[in-house]
Image (tube, rainbow, N blue to C red; front, side):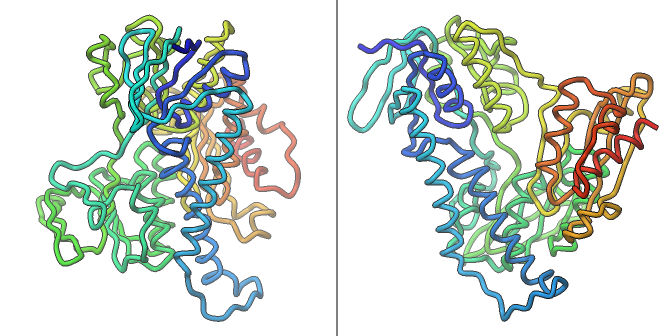
Length: 459
């Protein structure tokens, strides 16, 4: 019977990153993953395929709406959806092969099947070929999350769909209703709107991307409305009927009932930890009130030798957060000291423009009673943005009124996801707005807007 230093259940960003880093550090590691491809939700049906679709659809939209201003003439544009989807699948396949290569390089063993805890040192693997037991010094639970299903609107994979199906439509739906205006809903909504769908978004809360700074959310909504998306906020969905290739959804706003009809309904109201079949209760692993696995500051569960990271524990369900936890925990297993700073986890919505943030929002600072200064600079005033025809958006930096320490950064821009990294680094090292303002940025670059906003905040 094989003995390992670490057996990981789940081959997504949390699991495979931890496995590779632990293997690199000399530990004997095994990963149990039930799906054929490694990479989890993020690689196979989440982050990566959705970004491939966002990129392709943005090219199409840009060609149809903005090429002419650049002197580029085209004939009638059309979308070959099969080719677009094939490209998406190749991106996923290539990256999955990359993970397999790293497993071999770092001597990580992979077991295809479903993992279950028998005790603190034994994992049972069930597969079509039979059942086997893996003995190990440590067990890591990294099984990720799944889409939340509304009780009155079960996924049928055809008309009522989750994000898993919304990245793989065989045809562009004439009408698409999106329930939920978070990152997943508006990203996939914008994909299909660019490709020709009439997209309507219904959101229970009063604004889109509720976790973001309100100024960014408002500006992003205005931009998406210009792109054709229609929003119904403060609206609660109550029931659904399907038939004849479409759905009829009943919702209520301010006591008034409304009906929405669409060929496809994407339910994007959030995700929940996937812990079914892990044997947690029998093993005595404690759960939180929110249904996540309870862990301490070093990701240990209530049972010695059993750990958990990623979407199954508290915190934002973000791949980069899971990856950071995986790297840190691998180092702990190898006898090193490691931790992550949860105050500097960036958040990004990959629409066009993108929204990105790190730290506290202006609303949170007001609620906390924190004295702060706000500095803002628009991309309209930036030379590189003007030349690139990417002038939409702004950078807003929030700094402590007394110490000038950066408390939060909020960006709306075509490249917000790239620009936010500098701000995360600045906050990681407790930089002041003045520090960022005095940091030399190449000219002309869109990153100069960060310097300008920092200067405004430190003035």
